Amino acid sequence: MSESLSAAERRPLDLRAVALVMLLCLIWGVQQVAMKGIATDVPPVMQLAMRFGLASIFFAIWVLAREGRAAFVDGTLPSGVLLGLLFSLEFIFMGQALNHTSAAHTIVFLYTAPIFTALGLRVLPEEHLSRLQWAGIGIAFLGIIVAFLGLGGRSALEILIGDLLALLAGVSWGFSNVVLRRGRVGGSNTAKTVLYQVATAALLLGTFAALTGQTRFAPSAAAVLGLAFQTIIISIVSYLVWFWLLRRYLISRLMLLSLLTPLFGVMFGAAFLKDPISLRFSVGTGLVLAGVLVVNLELLRRPQPRLIASAGRVKM
Image (cartoon, rainbow, N blue to C red; front, side):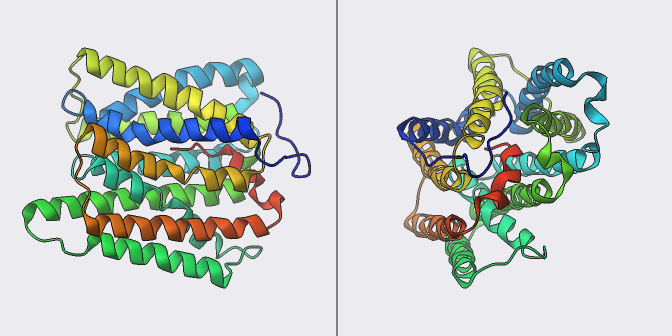
């Protein structure tokens, strides 16, 4: 894969880029639905461990063929391991969330990640949050509060636990972007950055699945097809397409379009899994997405070079 273009050479989105991002949003929106659909055959955490393990083999071959034995002595290892740890926590929380709440709730709270990225970057000397961004963060957190209101009873408590776990997944994803902005791993090639994430996740998620007794695998046709979809389409193809886009187009515009993913996730969850969508949750979701949109719109006013390091982040 070619090196990324400079900020000055990156171009605004054309019809091809918009079409590809829309396709990726559809794919990422359906992944929680795919995981939930085969959860009785393979627990979500085990699904993730298997899919990342298989993807690790692919990316390891790629990296070793390109860089050989010197691939991990370039100073990227410490920040790469930290990135992989945050990536793993994101999916541990997401996998556990799917055991307690709906796919629709999970994907919406997962996509609060940009809020936590903004908060994490606030402590860096070269970063600051504008009043508009703080307003966006306030709107998003108000949406989270609204989405949690009115819960009562044992089943509702379980949903609340699942939603909180999904929110922690968003926190982990958000702070992983901070690592990419400051760590040396952000400057490494795409395949190596992805390898740090998927290999660490395969190891930790596999261990977590074993320790928590979630290693069940019933090789039904649905389970096999679901795992093949997650490994090939999501963990390999969609990541490569996303990074191809990040290397050629204005990153802030791509990030903005990716906010369509939660909307697709909610629609797929309702259509295929019959996930209920209450008025309260709809209002809260609208506020969350509005807040995230405000935070990301502010990025359009900033110089593009500040966003280049984010090109190494795996999208979900």
